[in-house]
Amino acid sequence: MLRVLVCVSGGGTNLQALIDGVENGRIRNAEIVRVISNNRNAYALTRADAHGIEGICVSPGDFRDRAAFYDAFLQAVDEALPDLIVLAGFLVVIPVKMIEKYRNRILNIHPSLIPSFCGTGFYGLKVHEKALERGVRVTGATVHFVDEGTDTGPILLQKAVKVEPGDTPQILQRRVMEEAEWELLAEAVDLFAQGSVVVEDGRAVIVR
Ligand code: GAR
Image (cartoon, rainbow, N blue to C red):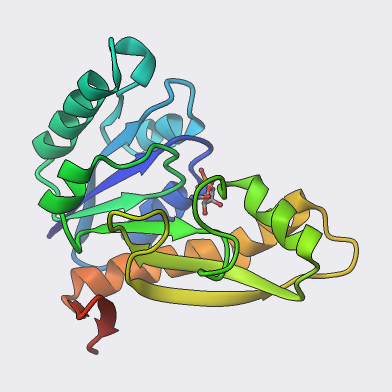
């Protein structure tokens, strides 16, 4: 069984997609062993609790400085003995030490087709605001491995989603979640759990 740790900051619909995927067999040979939130009030923690998954909060506000927060966060990560870490709407910059330790074992879901609308400052609703401002006809979602840059790691899966006339950032966000994110994330974890993903020369390759 692949031990999956999920890091969250907010509502946790992507976490829910993973929980559902494990429960309904879409994701095989994997269990979610812990959920870590940087935000005590994240609804994602309630979702974890409702499914008997340990949810813990490691909040920057509870520590004297960033280094102390990162130490506690990394300890909470290590304790879970994860084979795979999924950033499912996690809005904390991952410490370099953790990236080095878990290289090619950290996946992130981003709500655009990378390299569009990504990088510093592009998260959550802002991504969709920028996509609508630019007037793109197609957007989507990307699952990628995490490296030292922001949204620069090897791309594993992408799916396009149409922008429709009259879309607001909220409407577009919901469509991207429903049509792309939840599906892609479950598929990515399943592929990883099947041992079907390798990273070669900085690119993710799917071997089926
Ligand atoms: C999702 O749309 C996810 O792609 C995005 O935050 C949202 C979290 O929703 N992540 C980023 O923007 C990362 N750069 P959720 O808490 O309902 O899963």
